[in-house]
Image 1: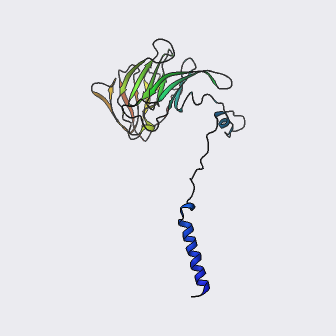
Image 2: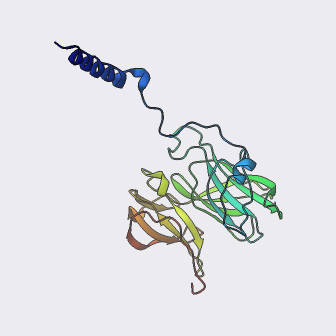
Length: 243
Protein backbone atom coordinates (compact mmCIF):
# COMPACT_ATOMS: atom_id res chain seq x y z
CA UNK A 1 0.00 0.00 0.00
CA UNK A 2 1.34 3.39 -0.95
CA UNK A 3 2.37 6.02 1.54
CA UNK A 4 -0.32 8.36 0.17
CA UNK A 5 -3.13 5.89 0.99
CA UNK A 6 -1.86 5.42 4.57
CA UNK A 7 -1.65 9.16 5.09
CA UNK A 8 -5.21 9.56 3.80
CA UNK A 9 -6.51 6.92 6.23
CA UNK A 10 -4.67 8.42 9.18
CA UNK A 11 -6.06 11.85 8.35
CA UNK A 12 -9.63 10.48 8.18
CA UNK A 13 -9.12 8.68 11.52
CA UNK A 14 -7.86 11.89 13.12
CA UNK A 15 -10.92 13.80 11.90
CA UNK A 16 -13.26 11.13 13.33
CA UNK A 17 -11.53 11.14 16.72
CA UNK A 18 -11.69 14.93 16.81
CA UNK A 19 -15.40 14.98 15.93
CA UNK A 20 -16.40 12.45 18.59
CA UNK A 21 -14.06 13.60 21.34
CA UNK A 22 -15.98 14.73 24.48
CA UNK A 23 -13.69 17.72 24.78
CA UNK A 24 -14.80 18.96 21.37
CA UNK A 25 -18.52 19.30 22.25
CA UNK A 26 -20.21 22.57 21.34
CA UNK A 27 -20.80 25.21 23.99
CA UNK A 28 -24.23 26.41 25.12
CA UNK A 29 -26.27 28.18 22.41
CA UNK A 30 -26.43 31.28 24.63
CA UNK A 31 -23.29 32.21 26.53
CA UNK A 32 -23.94 32.50 30.29
CA UNK A 33 -23.64 36.03 31.62
CA UNK A 34 -23.99 37.57 35.06
CA UNK A 35 -27.08 39.71 35.70
CA UNK A 36 -26.64 43.45 35.41
CA UNK A 37 -27.74 45.95 38.07
CA UNK A 38 -31.14 47.45 37.15
CA UNK A 39 -29.72 50.91 36.47
CA UNK A 40 -27.11 49.48 34.11
CA UNK A 41 -29.78 47.41 32.35
CA UNK A 42 -31.74 50.61 31.78
CA UNK A 43 -28.81 52.19 29.95
CA UNK A 44 -28.58 49.22 27.55
CA UNK A 45 -31.98 49.86 25.93
CA UNK A 46 -31.89 51.15 22.36
CA UNK A 47 -34.56 53.86 22.05
CA UNK A 48 -35.78 56.04 19.17
CA UNK A 49 -34.78 59.71 19.29
CA UNK A 50 -36.81 61.67 21.81
CA UNK A 51 -37.71 58.66 23.96
CA UNK A 52 -36.62 57.98 27.54
CA UNK A 53 -36.90 54.86 29.68
CA UNK A 54 -37.09 55.08 33.47
CA UNK A 55 -36.75 52.50 36.22
CA UNK A 56 -39.89 52.35 38.39
CA UNK A 57 -39.17 49.31 40.59
CA UNK A 58 -36.82 46.35 40.75
CA UNK A 59 -35.76 43.45 42.96
CA UNK A 60 -36.01 42.98 45.88
CA UNK A 61 -39.20 45.09 45.96
CA UNK A 62 -40.76 42.97 43.20
CA UNK A 63 -39.90 39.68 41.51
CA UNK A 64 -40.99 38.69 37.99
CA UNK A 65 -43.70 41.32 37.29
CA UNK A 66 -46.81 39.77 35.72
CA UNK A 67 -49.57 42.38 35.52
CA UNK A 68 -50.22 45.92 36.67
CA UNK A 69 -53.02 48.45 37.07
CA UNK A 70 -53.42 51.99 38.36
CA UNK A 71 -56.03 52.83 40.99
CA UNK A 72 -58.05 56.04 41.35
CA UNK A 73 -55.29 57.52 43.54
CA UNK A 74 -52.64 57.05 40.87
CA UNK A 75 -50.93 54.19 42.68
CA UNK A 76 -49.54 51.33 40.62
CA UNK A 77 -50.53 47.80 41.71
CA UNK A 78 -48.13 45.11 40.46
CA UNK A 79 -48.49 41.35 40.71
CA UNK A 80 -45.19 39.47 40.68
CA UNK A 81 -44.08 35.87 40.84
CA UNK A 82 -41.31 33.53 41.89
CA UNK A 83 -43.36 30.39 41.21
CA UNK A 84 -44.14 31.05 37.53
CA UNK A 85 -44.50 28.98 35.40
CA UNK A 86 -44.95 26.07 37.85
CA UNK A 87 -47.70 26.55 40.43
CA UNK A 88 -46.85 25.91 44.07
CA UNK A 89 -47.88 22.40 44.99
CA UNK A 90 -50.76 21.83 47.39
CA UNK A 91 -49.46 21.94 50.95
CA UNK A 92 -46.61 24.35 50.19
CA UNK A 93 -46.92 28.08 50.89
CA UNK A 94 -46.71 29.97 47.56
CA UNK A 95 -44.17 32.79 47.29
CA UNK A 96 -45.80 35.32 44.98
CA UNK A 97 -47.22 38.71 45.87
CA UNK A 98 -49.03 41.95 45.11
CA UNK A 99 -47.17 45.23 45.69
CA UNK A 100 -48.41 48.82 45.57
CA UNK A 101 -46.04 51.46 44.17
CA UNK A 102 -46.74 55.06 45.14
CA UNK A 103 -45.07 58.46 44.98
CA UNK A 104 -43.70 58.03 41.47
CA UNK A 105 -41.64 61.15 40.81
CA UNK A 106 -40.19 62.80 37.68
CA UNK A 107 -37.41 60.20 37.57
CA UNK A 108 -39.97 57.38 37.45
CA UNK A 109 -38.95 55.76 40.73
CA UNK A 110 -41.60 54.82 43.28
CA UNK A 111 -40.80 56.38 46.66
CA UNK A 112 -43.25 54.20 48.61
CA UNK A 113 -43.42 50.44 48.19
CA UNK A 114 -46.05 48.47 50.11
CA UNK A 115 -46.56 44.71 50.05
CA UNK A 116 -50.34 44.54 49.93
CA UNK A 117 -50.51 40.72 49.80
CA UNK A 118 -48.13 37.79 49.95
CA UNK A 119 -48.43 34.00 49.64
CA UNK A 120 -50.19 34.25 46.28
CA UNK A 121 -49.86 31.62 43.55
CA UNK A 122 -49.00 32.99 40.07
CA UNK A 123 -51.23 36.08 40.38
CA UNK A 124 -51.82 37.36 36.86
CA UNK A 125 -55.11 39.27 36.74
CA UNK A 126 -55.40 42.30 39.07
CA UNK A 127 -58.02 45.05 39.46
CA UNK A 128 -57.91 47.64 42.27
CA UNK A 129 -61.43 48.67 43.33
CA UNK A 130 -62.61 52.22 44.14
CA UNK A 131 -61.61 53.31 47.62
CA UNK A 132 -58.08 51.93 47.51
CA UNK A 133 -58.57 49.20 50.12
CA UNK A 134 -59.92 46.37 47.97
CA UNK A 135 -58.52 44.54 44.98
CA UNK A 136 -59.64 41.64 42.82
CA UNK A 137 -56.78 39.30 42.00
CA UNK A 138 -56.27 35.90 40.43
CA UNK A 139 -54.31 33.42 42.54
CA UNK A 140 -54.46 29.73 41.70
CA UNK A 141 -57.08 28.30 41.71
CA UNK A 142 -59.54 31.14 42.43
CA UNK A 143 -60.42 34.75 41.73
CA UNK A 144 -60.20 36.51 45.10
CA UNK A 145 -61.17 39.81 46.66
CA UNK A 146 -58.50 41.04 49.07
CA UNK A 147 -59.38 43.77 51.56
CA UNK A 148 -57.38 46.02 53.86
CA UNK A 149 -59.90 46.42 56.70
CA UNK A 150 -57.75 48.45 59.12
CA UNK A 151 -56.04 50.86 56.72
CA UNK A 152 -52.45 49.70 57.29
CA UNK A 153 -51.86 49.14 53.57
CA UNK A 154 -51.91 45.34 53.77
CA UNK A 155 -54.72 42.90 53.03
CA UNK A 156 -56.04 41.15 56.12
CA UNK A 157 -59.20 39.65 54.60
CA UNK A 158 -59.42 37.21 51.69
CA UNK A 159 -62.64 36.08 50.02
CA UNK A 160 -63.10 33.65 47.13
CA UNK A 161 -65.27 35.25 44.45
CA UNK A 162 -65.14 32.54 41.77
CA UNK A 163 -63.46 29.20 41.28
CA UNK A 164 -61.88 26.80 41.07
CA UNK A 165 -60.35 27.43 37.66
CA UNK A 166 -58.15 24.95 35.85
CA UNK A 167 -54.42 25.73 35.73
CA UNK A 168 -52.92 22.95 33.64
CA UNK A 169 -51.44 25.80 31.57
CA UNK A 170 -50.52 28.64 33.93
CA UNK A 171 -49.12 31.17 31.47
CA UNK A 172 -52.51 32.14 30.06
CA UNK A 173 -54.65 31.81 33.14
CA UNK A 174 -57.16 34.39 34.39
CA UNK A 175 -55.95 37.77 33.22
CA UNK A 176 -56.74 41.25 31.93
CA UNK A 177 -59.35 42.19 34.54
CA UNK A 178 -61.09 45.35 33.29
CA UNK A 179 -64.00 47.14 34.95
CA UNK A 180 -66.57 47.86 32.27
CA UNK A 181 -68.92 50.85 32.05
CA UNK A 182 -71.76 48.47 33.00
CA UNK A 183 -70.19 47.57 36.35
CA UNK A 184 -69.10 44.07 35.29
CA UNK A 185 -65.47 42.96 35.40
CA UNK A 186 -64.27 41.61 32.05
CA UNK A 187 -61.54 38.95 31.88
CA UNK A 188 -59.73 36.38 29.71
CA UNK A 189 -59.59 32.59 30.18
CA UNK A 190 -56.40 31.03 28.88
CA UNK A 191 -55.43 28.26 26.49
CA UNK A 192 -55.85 24.52 27.33
CA UNK A 193 -57.58 25.08 30.67
CA UNK A 194 -60.95 23.40 31.30
CA UNK A 195 -62.66 25.18 34.19
CA UNK A 196 -65.82 24.33 36.12
CA UNK A 197 -66.57 27.46 38.08
CA UNK A 198 -68.72 27.99 41.16
CA UNK A 199 -69.91 31.16 42.84
CA UNK A 200 -67.54 31.83 45.73
CA UNK A 201 -66.01 28.41 45.01
CA UNK A 202 -68.93 26.52 46.54
CA UNK A 203 -72.15 24.79 45.51
CA UNK A 204 -73.11 23.98 41.95
CA UNK A 205 -71.04 24.65 38.86
CA UNK A 206 -72.48 27.76 37.18
CA UNK A 207 -70.12 28.06 34.22
CA UNK A 208 -67.83 25.75 32.24
CA UNK A 209 -65.14 27.11 29.93
CA UNK A 210 -62.80 25.26 27.60
CA UNK A 211 -59.50 26.82 26.51
CA UNK A 212 -59.40 30.40 25.22
CA UNK A 213 -62.48 32.52 25.96
CA UNK A 214 -63.53 35.86 27.37
CA UNK A 215 -66.04 36.27 30.19
CA UNK A 216 -67.33 38.76 32.74
CA UNK A 217 -68.29 38.66 36.40
CA UNK A 218 -69.82 40.79 39.12
CA UNK A 219 -67.25 42.18 41.58
CA UNK A 220 -69.35 40.98 44.54
CA UNK A 221 -69.17 37.30 43.56
CA UNK A 222 -72.84 37.04 42.57
CA UNK A 223 -72.69 36.24 38.84
CA UNK A 224 -70.33 35.11 36.08
CA UNK A 225 -71.03 34.53 32.39
CA UNK A 226 -69.16 33.72 29.20
CA UNK A 227 -68.87 36.31 26.42
CA UNK A 228 -66.86 34.91 23.50
CA UNK A 229 -65.73 31.45 22.45
CA UNK A 230 -62.87 29.94 20.51
CA UNK A 231 -59.95 32.29 21.08
CA UNK A 232 -56.55 30.57 21.15
CA UNK A 233 -55.00 32.25 24.17
CA UNK A 234 -56.49 35.70 24.88
CA UNK A 235 -54.21 37.84 27.02
CA UNK A 236 -55.03 41.49 27.44
CA UNK A 237 -58.05 43.63 26.61
CA UNK A 238 -59.26 47.21 27.09
CA UNK A 239 -62.24 49.44 26.46
CA UNK A 240 -62.18 52.32 24.00
CA UNK A 241 -64.07 55.63 24.24
CA UNK A 242 -67.18 53.99 22.78
CA UNK A 243 -67.31 51.34 25.49
